[in-house]
Structures are given as C-alpha cells and as structure tokens.
Length: 87
Image (cartoon, rainbow, N blue to C red; front, side, top):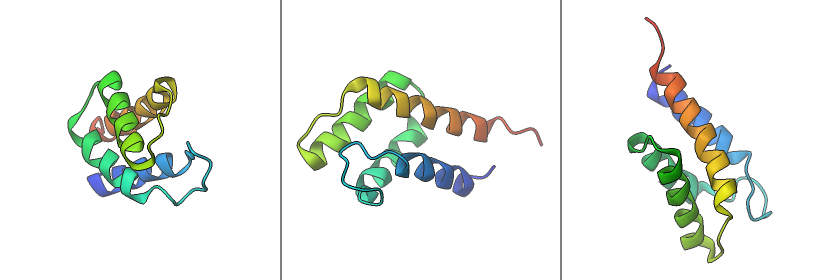
C-alpha cells in the first residue's frame, strides 16, 4: 500500500468519528493535522494526546482520552499494516 492509499484509509477512519456530534465532514482541518502527526508518531498514548490537543484547540472542548486512544490505535494499525507489505 502506498502513502496515498494509507492516507485515504486514515481519513476514512477519522471521518467515521464524530466526537462532537456536529456531523461528519466537519473536521477536515483536524484530520489534516492528525495525518501529519500519524506519519511521525508510533506510540498510541502520544498519538492520543496529540489527537486530544488538536480537537481541544479547535473546539475548546476536551474529548476523553479513552476515545482518543481508541482512534489512535486504529490509526496506528492502518499505518503499520501499510508498511508491512511483502513485495
């Protein structure tokens, strides 16, 4: 899987999440920020804290860390599966 395919899967995963119940498709800026961080972070807790901070900055509301960890794990599975392809 190439980087573009991986990014599309990451975006799909994040688009399925509507943490503030404002409707999917309203988190494009946050998703773009998260995609950048996923490229460099491999730790679930670190990624979860970053996700929490991104959404808090945008919405002035804190998402429970447990929810952020759930999505951090999903994102890292997608990332790790894309880099383990046998050629």
